[in-house]
Structure formats: C-alpha cells, structure tokens
Image (cartoon, rainbow, N blue to C red; front, side, top):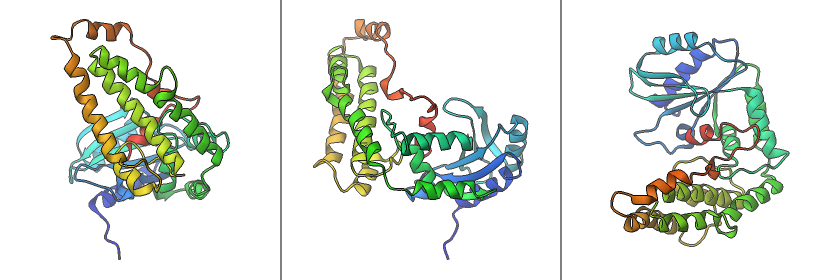
Length: 291
C-alpha cells in the first residue's frame, strides 16, 4: 500500500474545502508532486477548475480556516490564483483557478489547429494529462484526461519545430544574433533575456522532435535526458557551457558603471519574443511555473 506524503494529505484536505463551492467543477494536483521529482523546496500546485470566480471573501475564509503562516490572495500576475504557506507544515501552497471552457480551448488549439508558441507549446496538455484528480463533480476532468491521451499530432510537431527552430539562429532577428549584439553592447541584462528565450525555443524543439509533451520550466536538462531518446550529443554539457559563457561574456566587455550600454538598452527596448502569446493564450506561464 502506497503511503500518502504530507504534501498529498494537505492537497487532499484543501480539495475537500474547495469542493464545497458550487462553481467548482474539478480539482487536480499537478507539478512536481505528481511527476516524482520533488525536492525540499517543492510546493503544492493545486488546479481548481471553476465556472466562475470564487468570491475573495470566501477564499479568505478558507485559507484562514486551513491555517496560513503567510498568504498572498487574489494574485493576477500570471493567472487568477492564491498562494500561502501552510501554518502546520510550512508547505507552500499554489492554487490556480482555471475555467473549464478556457482550458478546453487551449487544448483544441493544439489538437485541431496545431498552433505552436515560442517555447512551452504543449505545457497545458502535459498539465492535464499528468495531473492527479482530487475531485471531479460530474466527470468532466476524467473525460478531458482521456482525450489528452491521444497521439501527438504530426501537424503540431511540425509547427512547433518550424516556429522555434527558425528563431534559434536562421533568421535575421534570431536569438543567436540578438545575443551577439547584446554582448558587443556589453548589455548583460539583454544577454540574459535572450539566452532565456533561446533556451525556451530550444527545448520546445527537442520535446516536439521526440513526440514528448513539454513538462514545464523546471529541471529541463534532466527531463530532456530522461524523456527524449533523440538528443544532440553532449546536450547537457553544451547548455551548461552556454550558460557559463553568457554569465561572463557581457561582463568582460562592460565599461565601468555601465556607461552608454545601460542607457542604450532602455532606449532600444523591444517586446520580448518569448512572451509572445497567441490569441486566447494568456496564461502559458502558469502552466509552466507549476512544475
């Protein structure tokens, strides 16, 4: 018999509280707790599927009843959510509120329309397929998870590779070209920003190439090695070497005090390509950060 962990017990208890709200259709546990890659800092990622917003006052009462050492409620940075530290265990709790119709739409974009993103294209699909159901009022989540077990569409795979591979180094505004310019400008912030974007697209290509759903933003080297049979030779070492080089390249060229490079960076600010969102996809970061 499998022994329930302290995190799982807390998640199940919280699901019992949230299930009392009539608008809640389903509740699932996601992230590292269901992937088996936890560490001492791992939190609880609780996905609450609700057809309308649960009043803040009701959520405040729930958190107070459960016991919180510190809480931040009604967060709107990535998507609607509440976060707190459980008073009894010290465990961090991250609750995300998703509308059933909204997540269905995100999955249809992948399954039927084969719409790729710049990085993290299939994170939502991964979240649904691998989350553990704690409550399912009418079987909606069970049906969606069954649908999520369909094969990886070849059209989606091709679209992800085509969109993300091009921006690595093939086109003029590629990430590699932008990184080179940032190094010449001694703009360490821009180097870091563009390297992050390059890695987002790089791993999106790797997972798509292997017909593997993107597991999120954490432990990507380990996840790729464990899940992808087809990888570039020496991939972990190459990625780590690039990160070390990026950390030192701009600093070697930086003038004392930042000089004109810092001011130029502000004047020439451009929208971040890695944050590009397709229509109807405002919450990609939430699915990724929950792993």
